[in-house]
Length: 206
Image (cartoon, rainbow, N blue to C red):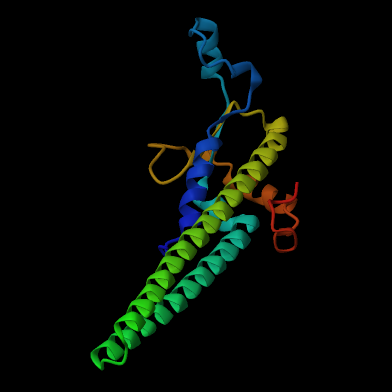
């Protein structure tokens, strides 16, 4: 398992995917032909954007869950490393005894079969723990999606933005800071978040 912040990469991707949201029901039919009326409406639409990196680093839910995933990832690595070391020691010991003619042919075949089984078990454990980590990461992505979507729906009742974009890196070629609502969103998310992650192990409380 790679030691990179896999959860962070996936979470940013998930966040970017849904932040580009139409918040005005009157503009929801995107497949209709453009008319002078709709063109004028689009020209007068209110838009805003949120800095994805700021959400990931300043939203308390993200910070807590990132630490939780990092800890789980480290535990997985330690478990696999310990199992791998045990296998290497056993294999080295087997090789040494082979050189010393300490085994009969039948004994050697039995030990070799045991080592192969140990290796297969290690591979299966690696796959299982990786799947569990992936599942936990997806759970985090969904919780982040739900909490942000829930908050933006409430936030936009008064603001009435037509679209709210996710700004990450250079995905927006130009964005006037006047349209940046990141601080408002982060403050609102943290105010709503009750810090129940470590007691419930689930998504941010609404």
